[in-house]
Length: 180
Image (tube, rainbow, N blue to C red; front, top):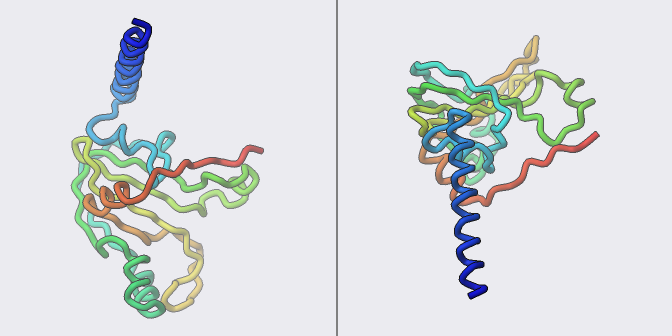
């Protein structure tokens, strides 16, 4: 009798947690795959800026990054650095954008403000379409010429299939920020 009550209680608790998760996603306006990709090995997007905009954008990895990788690395390493397509046309209705500054102190955040990677997720009808990383460059990686002022350039691009494969192959890692 006691075990039966435990099973009923466990089932009720599970249903309550599922209902809370669903209502949380509903309350925040998340749909489709969005609640599932809020915190993954791609990053913690719970505090990301959400931009509602319908358009089609042509994304292309910055050519000097491609040249540098192809010139300096053998084929197996090239595939590790250039993991997705070099260019991609993305139709989207929402973008999540965050600055990749987790794990650094508040003093470092202040000192290097605007120089951290900018990570973006592109969505269409609640389905992930693309993942991008814009890195801050002070020099052209192919030529070594100085960029004045330094600027963010697209360095990593992943399409839908590549994103889903990455999430499937790698276990979720926790993004733990240092406390000051």
